Image 1 (cartoon, rainbow, N blue to C red):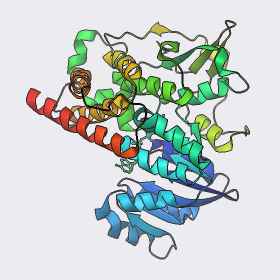
Image 2 (spheres, helix red, strand yellow):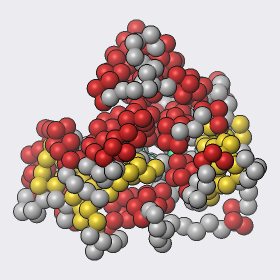
Image 3 (cartoon, rainbow, N blue to C red):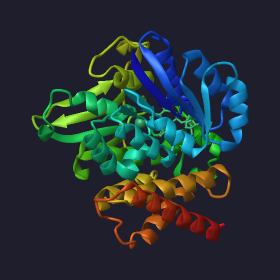
Length: 389
Ligand code: NAD
Ligand code: MG
């Protein structure tokens, strides 16, 4: 039996992962399931799938989790240390689907015990791509992309020589406001931003799709994952979200990965890799689809894309700074403290303020340095937001 753990099991990616695992219970032994605060969901899934341990991130919820698991034989844990302890438990395949930089360390722990890490948590690659790859190589762990675009690139590269790649095109739906007049963006509310035209995802990534901070993170993720020169990475708006990415080769061929917007494809691909197995996703009817369209990704509408270029060029820990500033700006927008259009300004101000920090652009860094850069950026973002509201 394959030992599997799912970090962020109660979220959108986590639930899709459990859907696939739950269809084939004889194949999998569930080691750890973790969640943030949704005790009822976590406990129900842990009992149903016979998990060894269930961990909730919020320490105060331990009594609730214990009560929900009473008599089931599933161990209960709570808090950051319990989460890391669960990540240390040997598993063959681990889904990293916590949202934000909080997902970095559990994923690193899984790599250190030699697991195959299916990486939905793009923030890990943005904050510490080099470290992730180094830890995987040092401990016999393996990283597989789960972000749909990166899974698409990974699949287009099977059997290919990376030296023959000329460019990678990451598609973007354009999110909730792609057709809004620019002068209305100032009034955009969190509720409006959290409505995605094509994908059903967690609240934070959906808002990040509207601002294209999600695409910005994905461009950086592409650079880190595949070791590409930033100049080779492009983005194009593709409102139908059917092509997830394209890889262009030196003979002019452009390989596109086409499929319906259902994350169970990318999750299932990572679960069964290196095999392909039947997955419960819709088969596309191309005639019904009729046409696929493309538009330029405008850096005036989506300044996050311009910032991503700066971060890719700077390298080092600037990804960790960028991500942390973005997380704080996003919280401030969700809480109604700043406007939608102010988020990019906050992140840009943090990048400017923190860029003189010693060691920021060194490519050799450890986890402590990432945590420090994340912390400095969060403090700076908080100051900038407080002084402008
Ligand atoms: P989500 O908000 O639906 O779920 C996040 C999960 O993380 C939940 O289980 C939540 O309880 C847990 N969590 C939140 N904060 C935590 C903390 N501080 N400590 C521990 N656990 C915490 O998010 P999602 O949409 O499933 O996205 C998860 C990750 O996958 C993100 O990194 C996102 O960018 C990435 N991703 C998501 C999709 C998608 O379709 N949803 C697609 C591509 C990539
Ligand atoms: Mg994606």
